[in-house]
Image 1: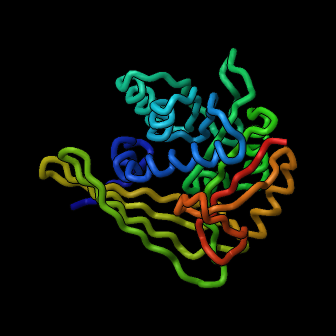
Image 2: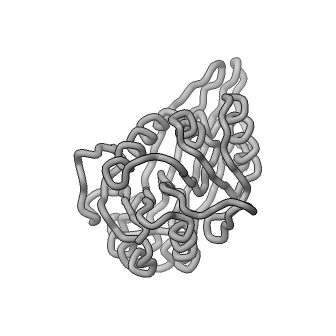
Length: 262
């Protein structure tokens, strides 16, 4: 079976099936953590909202949701699913490092979030800083930003491999993701994601290659110092357990930061 080279963001349904399992857990954490550190729930902004899985879930919970993504296929998919579910969200096509709010939109969001390492698509320090500054400007004073990403282990010299299977209706998607050892000098790591999609007994495979920017805990702290408008409050991990705070260090990989607009 031939493998098609294709950006998996151009096939939002398969992407959505793969990541949907964590949606409720992530939304539960966002709500509970927001109540702990701020309180109330009104307006939410999601940079890189992808297929709209969290946008829809948060809309269901009563949030006023806005979000954007750089991929037109993702935004179209997200808009359609939210409309079909009977909810509303303000969604548009844009990039994390240069996004602007739509005409007539007001700043003063209560909560923004960017989870599961999407932030690492910003491959330069200047783009990362600009993204954080724009998010800070979009938040009200006291508003919160939740940032989740995977720290890189520069000294292991080993790559990582993850495999998981998800189903929806007649569709099964097997995802294999391989991350190459981080290049400490260039601060980049190469990734390859291969999806095997089986629908009603017929299968095909598609593969995506890209690069992430790398971060150690020290490098992440240095980045945050460049955006003093966002105050570091706390750190968790991808278990989304609000009772278990973590130190921001290199003893574990998946960090989830709670930042507050000063």
